[in-house]
Length: 302
Image (tube, rainbow, N blue to C red; front, side, top):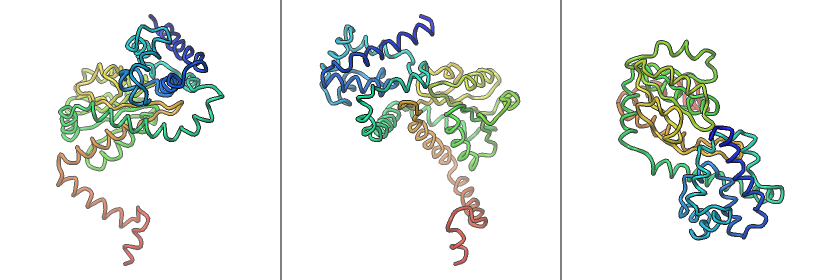
């Protein structure tokens, strides 16, 4: 099945759910709404997990799948799975929401739904983390001759955040994102002894893939941070860290990846606690001297 056929098939599944929604039972409507609102994580959830999240029985979830013409929930789950989030456009994501009759309810529930989804993403990321790989990545980054952080589109928010903090404690940190006009000019000298951290979350940015593909075989250690083992950039990785990402309508939620990055920064700082403490002692003096933070002027006057 080619890309266009896959996308058509995926859209047909959701159109079918939306079309039959008014005729569904109350329990089945809850499951349908969950799938439509959480289509990025639903394919990775078992019938038991969906049932627990929606607060219905596992049998109800199975019957819901069968009511749509599937032999059971595993078949329905497989139909959803094929990298849904990376294949749907922003307009298609917006169209995933239910019809006009449900908008008022969704509006009232949106804040709770978004926060619960983000909380769920962090919990899932914590359960899936490989602590041995995480430790190795922290050590590699700390010992790197030069660190290059790559992330485009919404992922540039993560690359800038990681770059900001690591630039405080490491000697040579470079961020390559949308602000860089010619990425290859910045990558051509990257080689042995250097470490690359490339981040990519759905919808996966082509530039990130091309940058990591270019660097493969040139000598650097490549660490990727993504949402799935099947993320395109992972084929070039020496080490991979995973964090769940979600999309609520048209907004990319990167809460779990950001939390993982914060943990990584702390772990890197702990690789040499004394050096990190000394750096921040010096920075605190500079910040106070130049009134970087509100209130510092009052402390100095005292």
